[in-house]
Image (tube, rainbow, N blue to C red; front, side, top):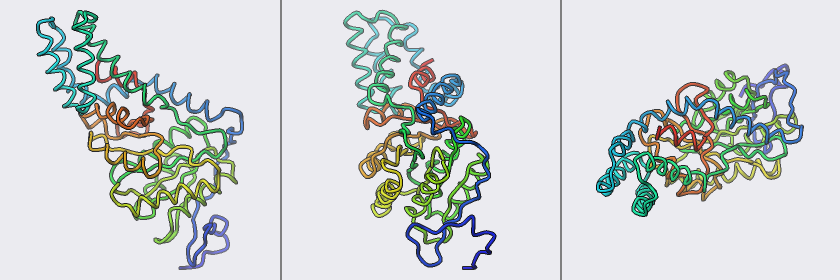
Length: 360
């Protein structure tokens, strides 16, 4: 490996566990932004601000779930001329519509039987009342087990967020969009290119760093350990007064146990630098896979303890019901949803906006 010239050494730092010819390359810090995270409650305010702005941008959620909404349009048709004598037929067709939209058998039966019970008890006497009850039931399923949809970043900086998932789910792109949103709200963000297996991953994240105006810590060399990269990034975040360190990781199948073990090493590495880190471990799940995402989520959760979910590509899927299933089955909150290709299209998840989007 060529020895870097003295002028460039200021931008290169050794790994925490140095090995021959292994260096960590970091882009120079050109930011003039004065960090405000030292103020009491900065992270709390940041999470609430992001959530409140999402409420003002419900149109993105509405348009993002258009295919699921089209799938469920039959609900209005079924309930328009509903009468008590047609209850069984209507509920059977409602059950089919929910299953097609990937609500899953258990959730679907729970919803339908709850509606049947209220109809027969005389509590629901019109199609509009049944639809309102349907929406309320879905909303309750989402909020009872997945209420903590805001980022939980703690009180010590830098807050550390690890992003995990399988290949092709949109993990690195989601991290880049999340960085954009956090930076836009005034946070000083450092990216860590911990995907050391995929050659193009670091280049992809570096493009996002340029695009969002964030700094990035990268590994130089093909054999760098992901845990060393993340550890060095968090050390830099601590020394240079960053608010948040976003850590990318290598995409892996949930059945590849050796790679899954690496996630444990990464988690331990950042925890040694900042006690209690990572504050969030967000798993990215491809919304087009529908209920097939559940085994992935369970395995990742068992290994590293997932604190929140990012569901991507939901704008291209008619299987939005999987959002309800994954929350109910796993008890893990959905924190963001991907509803488009644009940099602004990673939206904080709002349960009420979601319900209104699929059942207008």
